[in-house]
Image 1 (cartoon, rainbow, N blue to C red):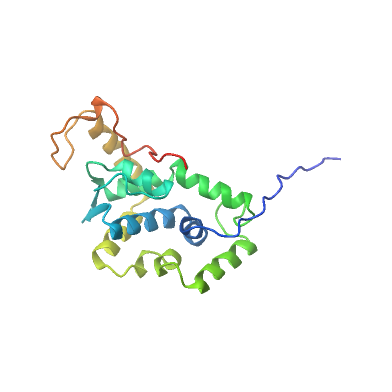
Image 2 (cartoon, one colour):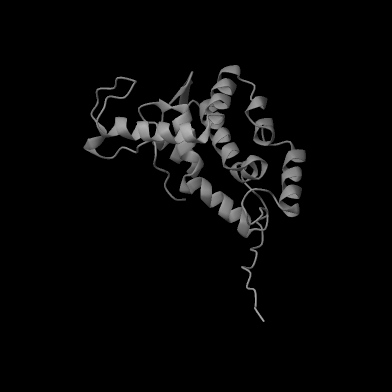
Length: 200
């Protein structure tokens, strides 16, 4: 007779932060969308059409935000940054933690009943912006909304190719912002494919 061992569920914390709620509402995609909007509203990144550039790499208050800022110090395709950050350790850690709390199914794709209750409670509190729950279509700023929507709807295969292109540019080619302050070979630069945030 086989004995099944299940990892015990950790007691959920009393409060969840905005990125926990974003993950419950829309998974890794929503986490990146919320980070882009938050940093844009704070003036920490500049969104121009299909590109994003960090204005202040020290402005990220959350690990996810710091990872995003580290991806685009000289400007990168918004779609490439989006594709890279979705699979970054800083985002994956949120999902793993929510599974451990019993708020997310072990598949990591859907909230459990407890997770759905937490999501609804957060919605009813009315503290977090609507786009955390509803996605970028609820972002008031039209320019930011369009940039985030377009980046988040790039097919996954294309996103991966954009990440590889970003790495190639870092390795030896001039980036499209025509910066002349040195190449990535000089060290200390995060390519568009890496997760750059420090730990809390």
